[in-house]
Image (cartoon, rainbow, N blue to C red; front, side):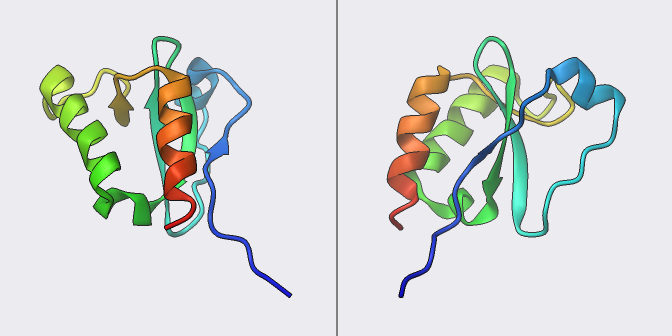
Length: 92
């Protein structure tokens, strides 16, 4: 018997679609936009206090300040780097 740790969820629609229609984010999760194509992911808020994720937040602050062009949290890193970092956080 086991349990599953929260994992990121990749949303399968374009950002334009997300901005024109309200999309529910489950309680305890946060939507972020990643990479040049601004793919939307839903991540557990528990990631916010992890040092690796805080580094990503610092990068976002350096690039966008507190005024994100997407209206949400945009993280300026490659999608594969983001997936690598968050997959390591799944074990926390």
